[in-house]
Amino acid sequence: MSFPGSDNFILSQVGEHERSLAQVAGAIAEGKAIDLNDLPTRLEFSGPDLPKPMPRIFARGVFLIVAPDVAEVLSRFDLGVGHVWPLECSDPGGYAYFGVYVGEEKSSWQREKSTAKRPGHKGKFRMDCLSLKRGDGSVVLGPEALEGADLWVEPSHSTVLAFFSEGLAEALMDLSLADELPFWECQIDE
Image 1 (spheres, rainbow, N blue to C red):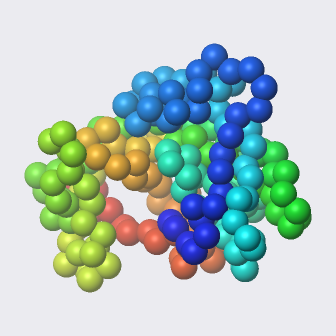
Image 2 (cartoon, rainbow, N blue to C red):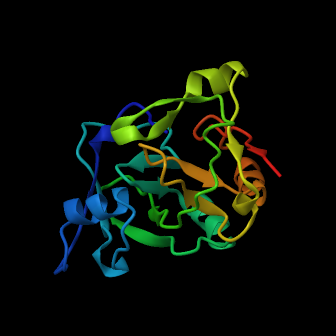
């Protein structure tokens, strides 16, 4: 979920906060609960020219940044402890974005049965996106993936990789996001 110039977008906190943005990001990466009041509030662009077209979804660290149409779809689904909130966009250009905190965790990934994986950091695994793109890899989840939140992360991954329920994925695909957000279908091991 990257595009040319995405590194020029900077998230920041405005006002007083208990924890710095770096501390919040670290807590999220470690799977710890956070105070929603410490989430970033401003998105700024520091590059020479705004990207054209502006992306509708991209990642900034452990957060997703989404356009209003994507935020509206997300708000219709169960995000568990996750959260969607508007960001102040102080730059000229007339764009609007929302932040997305994917806070829900499930332990549904069946790493022994999944073939699209490779070793990651600290004994965790990473998805092998190349094998998924080629169609010769699989991601297998247990039946618990069908319960609860529609958007979650798996703690056994060494990257922040979001999983979407079938209903949420279909609703987002209806927005024609395929070029900006690749979806790979997971198998459910029942």
